[in-house]
Length: 144
Image 1 (cartoon, rainbow, N blue to C red):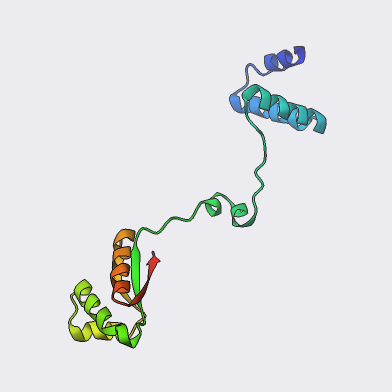
Image 2: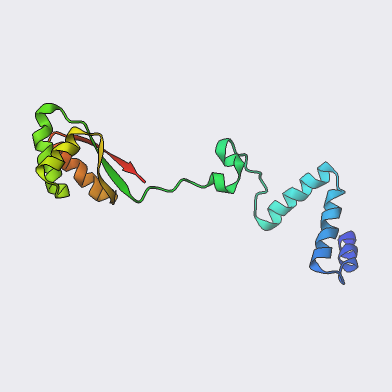
């Protein structure tokens, strides 16, 4: 303990940065066994664990790559091709959802896959999908 007091007395007049340099140089000059024991003492004294997180895959590229991808907030409903026997029902539902005329709604259904609705909430997109499916159509939801 006397050595620590002597070192601390020797650094009293130094700036924080200079004191940090003295501590770092002292640590750097220590043996592997001494450093291992020092690590254990830090963990005990401060109640922390000095474990290195081992990352694999994209997370190893850095903090930005480790961030979880954001969940989509806007959804599009894509109308898929319908079977010929279900087209009339799907056209009717498309007309009520989009305010398209008969000719335009039929063209949209005939040219599927086509985007039916864009920028919807998840709940609204699910409602549109259920209505199309109830009419015998097929569609998918794409998040953006």
